[in-house]
Each structure stands twice: as C-alpha cells, then as structure tokens.
Image 1 (tube, helix red, strand yellow):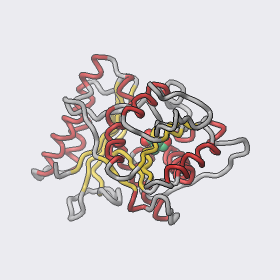
Image 2 (cartoon, rainbow, N blue to C red):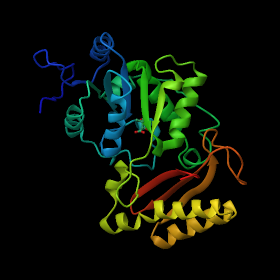
Image 3 (tube, protein in one colour):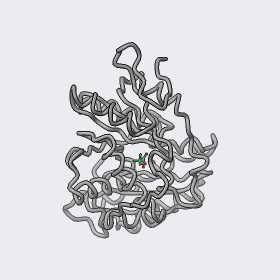
Image 4 (spheres, helix red, strand yellow):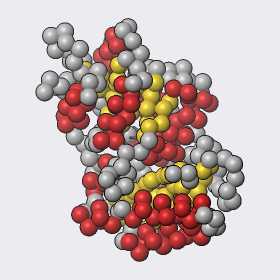
Length: 301
Ligand code: PAF
C-alpha cells in the first residue's frame, strides 16, 4: 500500500501515485499539476466508501484523464438529531481502495480547512430542494449545495459525478450549477450514475452498515415494494392508492416509519398526481432499525 496520509501532497519517487491532500495550498498545486496533463473528474463523497462509490470512480475514468475524490463528512448537511457523530469514518481504508482504482488525488480537508473561523456563507437552492428529503431534513440541501459549491471551486473539475440514489441531491446540484453559471464544472458536465444494488435489490448506502442482520433482511421490502407500486401504477392503479399500499407494506415488513413515498417528475421534481408525458420517478424514504433508507426508481423499469 503506497497511499499514506500526510498534510501535504504525497508523491512517491516520481511515480504518479495517489496524492492525499488535507490543506488548500497543496490541493491547488496538486490540481494545477494534474490539469497540466489532461482533464479532471471529481467524485465528491463523505467517505466510508462502498461499491457504489467505486462505481462512480470507474465511471469517472471514462469521463476524464485524472480522477480526484473528495472525502469530507460535512456537518452542515446533518440536522441536530442526525447521525453526524456516528457516521462511519475510515480514511485510511478509503484511500487504499481509491489507490487501487487508480485515483490520482484524494482531497480530505479537515473541518478548519473547509470552514475556517468566521465562515459565514451559504448556498441555498429553492424549488427542487423542497419536499421529499428537503421537508424531512430542514437545511440539509443548503448544507449540500454549500459544500459542493466549495468543492467545485477548490478542485475545479471538468466533470463531476454523483449517484442517482440521491436523485434530489443531484437535481439540487445541477440547479445550483445552472443558476450560478458555474464554469468548472458546467451544469451539463454534472453526471448522474445509476444506483448500485445488492443482489436482493437493496440500494448500496453507507447507512446500511447500521442495520442488524434481521433489519437487513427486512429492508429488501423497500425495493421490492417500490417495484410492486410501480407495476400497479403502470397497470392503471391510482397513484395515491399505490403509494399508500407501499407505505402499509413497509410498515408490515418491519419498517418503523415511512417519511414519504411519492411519485414526482424526474427533472423538475414536481409532484405527479395523474400520469402525464414527463418521465416520472417513485421516491421513498423509510426508517428501519437505526437507519433511514432512501431509494428512487423510474416509472418505466
Ligand atoms: O452524497 C454525498 O455523499 C454528500 O451529500 C456529498 C455530495 C459528498 C456532499 O457532502
């Protein structure tokens, strides 16, 4: 393992090894160095990497010459009662995984590098951030938009990749990039990568680690129930009935509560009460054991 943590960029004997950077000045030099020999893709993460993140990294390989991955557990996107303190942190293991994937740069700022004393600026996106997770997690998307805007300015990527599992987050980030006329990356260069799932269909998430064995088994009711609801809607069932049946099925399967189960237009995230022309997706968030799981699927499977 050549990846090693340092407060400065690491280069091993001139070999283009992964550079792990935790402060802004060495980051700027590392980014300049990489951009001198090609394009740069950024995969923003909060660490605790799993196959879903590695799929984003592999997709990034096809999109740019060099890949940078950011690892930062962003306190501004966690509510006061959320899991910030226990969110899994495993930086060394993450760096090993990223080195094996040929990542050129890991940007792992500490809190003071991201939000120095006196920090006072936020980015807030309305519209697409409202409802769904925006309603259940007040302030969450302001925290996401703020940190992603900073990550974009820090790393200056030509392309950035995000998982479609967090579809609403992707919509918020694209809206921000359009509204603020971002240049690196341009809104069109913000790419969504399809959700990676376990063999039984559960979407991969760092929060799956919170599930007991029994809850993990029960959690499959989420993707299974979503497919049943989608099939029912496609067969002509009223949307409200299909989503109500989905919620009841999740509760019966052992979920403690369902935050939402809603059909929305895929691009605008406007609620769909009656099927129209615009592509639609089913969005669900539900709690089981100590975890809040989210998922979304297109109406056309
Ligand atoms: O999806 C995530 O892991 C986070 O919300 C992100 C985009 C890295 C911002 O902190």
